[in-house]
Image 1 (cartoon, rainbow, N blue to C red):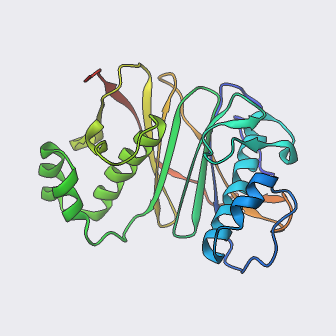
Image 2: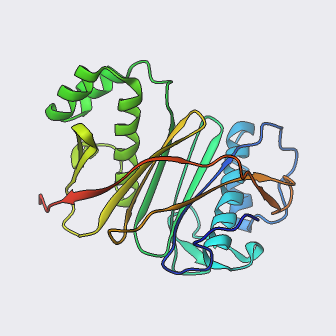
Length: 251
């Protein structure tokens, strides 16, 4: 499996990505836990591939971040937001249009979101309905779908990192021109990283020191029924920004 500068470091912050295989899954891999097998039975083929692949990616990310054997890595059942084995790691998962991402942190809260960069034809309607007046002003004036996607992924990653859903919470992080970020949490040290990989935009929100920068690794399956992985050394995230989030308690 690919190595990184954050491997085995309890203060690490990393992002692992992999493309979801397109071939049909005819049987479940042996390494799934009993709970994961039970949940997998509820999915049809596309959802099944995404679910199994996400559990594979989680194991790769936890193993590389912690130095723990990959076949012993486990996530808490139902909601993959923290590790069961090895304990003490927070994580976030996102997948969209054939690409999956898993963020793992030994520092605290983390959230990740990925979206296709140019597949949102109705983005103006979303901006007018759900975004703040200040965000509407600059996004509609700029008239750029890619700027909307960057804004949307930052908001989604923020909500995941702070443990909230979309409903009623999209304005808890405001993105202003120049990507000035303002959040509604009182805790210090919130940061956001924004980048692109292939035709996707990826946003990562996390709590870390002022000099923290996430590592990133793109992986591919060497064998769909085992936990073997191979690196894709020629493909990396192109990071556009690493930005502090100005926070305040609005309660």
